[in-house]
Image 1: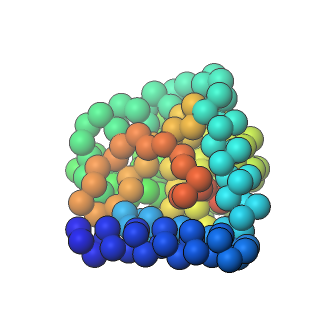
Image 2: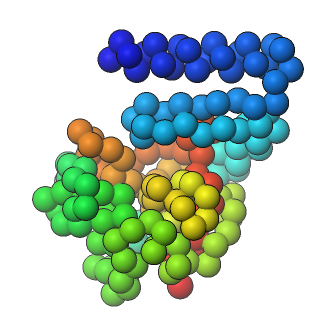
Image 3: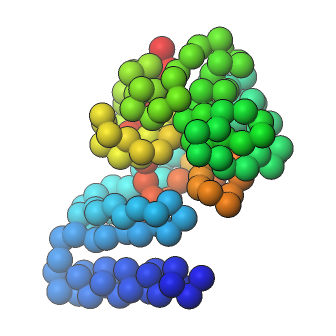
Length: 180
């Protein structure tokens, strides 16, 4: 825990120092996801605006997908790498499960494969039931189901459970997709 707090403090100090010195790159660390993302100062401002926009998005849309995702989030299903059952799921196992059980669609059990089953769009265009992807197109590394109002359901990381999470400018999805 001390290592994580030190990492966050260091990243904050580097970011503040960089902004004070006129740096155009801000590094964001999300210890829970084990990754770093780099954003320019402009992208950070745009991400903050996207979060605000998504928080006011109407939650109409694919109600059955959202309902199933929320049901799974209440069942305390642990993160299990490669898992795709109620005994344990990883992020793409969760999205595969929901779409297979609700819509009868097999998305595959890999974020990059799942990208091939969506009409790609910006994060700001996401509607409830759409998938949110982290990472560049063709090399995404995390996926969740957007449920509206700036929130999504995901299987986040080892030691955690399938849960409802809030989109934040510090761990912003890279793009979204409507399942076709």
